[in-house]
Length: 280
Image 1 (cartoon, one colour):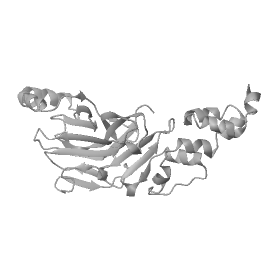
Image 2: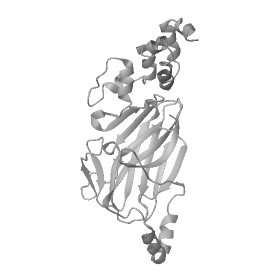
Image 3: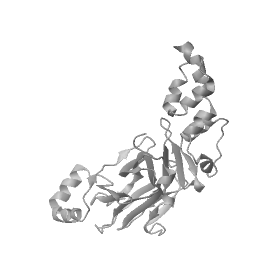
Image 4: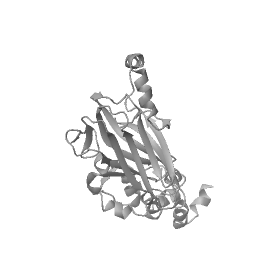
């Protein structure tokens, strides 16, 4: 079988591999010397790059070093800062599908420019030059948007708020925040407690403030309750919802809000919102 494969012209093998996926190409390179050579071809790897990859390269903060399209693909499998450091771009290594992260500066944060409520700082744990830290507010509203034409088509995407909770955090566990992802007339709702109560505090609140807690909770739009989870990079994420990126060009709106409890809260650190394929 190996001898027959080696008889195929290399450009023919390259053409075949270009209709597969990065994963298949990596595996095929081990089949024979012909496949190995074909799997290094720029013809193959250019098909795995986004159609607008030259535009993306023109917007990177730090120029990438590469000599082949495969090297470029592998460079883009790590997050690269674009648009003055306000966004992050990445390709999923197994599928070549596109991910974006919008920094806090790229989001619409109500009262975000009021130093009495929000502060902007640089921390070494973040890929972005700045993150937003909530000082104190009774009106938490964070919104973002992205367009499907810059994403991979025919792909289901998840939308995630990337955050940390500081040691001085307060008021984040009294009433759930409402989450929304909207594309056209399709809406995905959810809710989450940004910080989960410890057992003793929950018992005390249930004993003394049960009626108030129930009243506040009823103000929130019902939806799937989601729990923050830890990421490998040291941050936490909450899934705001998901959407399907089809072939039509549409605006994706996403938000997290807690504006109905009228309770002061603080200590939330926002890095950004990540939009990444679920079925990568």
